Length: 479
Image 1 (cartoon, helix red, strand yellow):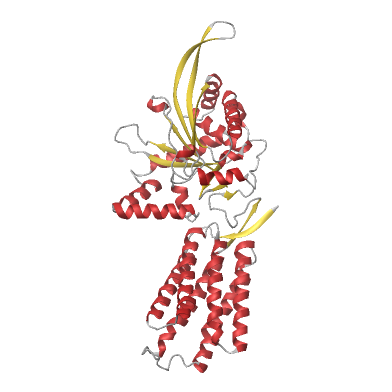
Image 2 (cartoon, rainbow, N blue to C red):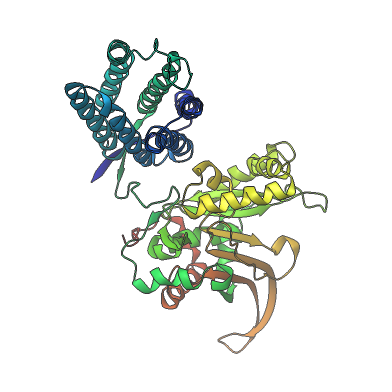
């Protein structure tokens, strides 16, 4: 069954302008209160509350708007509380009208951004509220409160109150722009909800043991398991030769391993979980990170690419996706990939400030507030990090997991080597092997589950022809 919800596909002009309006309204509100002598209640309810709501709305819009705009309902509710307190000084009839309007706006906003209600209903209500605030309410205040003509006791001119009214207009206009920017989406099964991250769905029915373990084993490195195995290459080499004869130039063991891992996720989705903020999440995509050297020279600097696979991808699908990524790296100017530009920007920050910036990134990541644009660039966020030592001619290494980010599995492939063995007939045979290592975060699934994944993985490598067709079924992770 398809579910409908709203999202903001990209940060367009209306979204950015909406966030700027909210921030400007917060700044203007602070300036307004700086010229008054408010009571403690006025300071918190009419000053701090709308300022906090405006800053929070802008931050959520810029970081979560693309995937989870429903989170902006929290600052909107805070803003409605501010408006309700503000209306308490009006006449009874006017006060009740305002309270009904604010309550309807808050409820309609949540129903729209969370459940996909028609956004034009909300837009129309916000437009009416904007017009009412700008024309009717302003006239009422001019008539009954004479705000703009009577000097204040503190010596501040009466027109100073106009700043407060201007912030209200800016807030309503920002909400209207954000609403117009929403675009409807439909999806089957999982849709983003409270408690989810923009890169994963929170697992709410996981065994209590696994809910507690992240609080005992706090980091990925202290929760790592290490495994070494090898694959016999007779079937693999024959499969690779067949693919190259079909025109897949450069097809190799790496493509087979990646396709085999995607097939494992199709049957065992628990291996695609991750731990973040001491909670378990199920990733909706298979995100593969790997280092790429544009040129095999000592001077060539590594860069990182991220590959997005589906559980139904075949070996050819993996090949073309990887080729597209590699070609984009080769065609890009030196040190001009998205990841390189991000690291260069961070490198411009002085050392102590960079420590503070990384701490802030960790904090945002802990609460799932990092923008999706950043987690897509980050090699530390993904399903799997893989490296191949074959081109370097060395055995596979046991690579540590990163405590920053949420990658739960690191795979390293070694070079091919020959071994003389006794065949079934008793004759000596020469066989080729590739060693590989897994370093895993044991908090994502138990040992029996992961052993089943590895047996299935090994079986695919012994008969890779099955990767020519999509997976027959894709098992969904627990809720």
